[in-house]
Length: 390
Image (cartoon, rainbow, N blue to C red):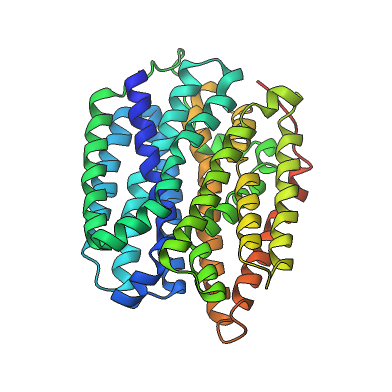
């Protein structure tokens, strides 16, 4: 099982990479195939939406087929195949299609590990283990910054994508050979996702789950690149360094959130406090417009750090889910979290298009404000949630 978890961690590194690498490809894709920032926002949104749409079938597959076959086959077909389509792309549409396939390939990886944690380990350790997996996998976020910019500048973006297709194939094979399916719970209880949707306690958590990851995920996954290029004139390599700083902050934030529920004896107030501070950080990102470039990069890093509450919110929701629905419970929560990024990424792309004729900074300030308002609304609804530790 340890070898299987290591392979799942490597697969999650790929998942984190694929959701974040478009930000450093903005310039070269614009030059080679005419892809605009709005085109790439749509492509990024396709990754998140296909990923989210797969969560319910992935939840069923985890409960019925187990994490080994679910994760290995989807990563092989979607991840490796999608990267190959990207390597052959000649238009923005091809990039969007490739990202759609890659999102499907990455969709079961994190939830497979969470399923194993929920089945094999004490419930009180779930939040810490979930945050640990998310933090370790976030190395992919770092690789998707300066190292990717370096590879693109020296090898070309097509050769880089062919290398990623091969890496995805190898990791998928490793998953099939090493992951062990946990024993199914005793009693043979039946149930469906409708049973979860009928639980009022979860509907006070879903809205914040929907918006919590969008600011850091969308900014790091795409907008940091166009923003720093259009407003500050940074090159691909310089954008890669800024993305690396934000990526490191996101990893640190994930690890920081992990044990806080046990330290403070509360999940609700740890989650609410962190996301309320993230609203303020997004507001600060608007106010530092025009300042020296290091200041918005520092605030972007702060947004990334505070955006690490994702696994703790999943742990909060999972605490109310019956054992026989664990697979579908964690994937349903993930559906809201990842689907929120996809939908909000499409909206941010429209904001960028509609305000592109204005001041170069105006589209990005509108995007920052949109994320701040959405997260604030999620926090208000979350105040009505019920706290619970395992």
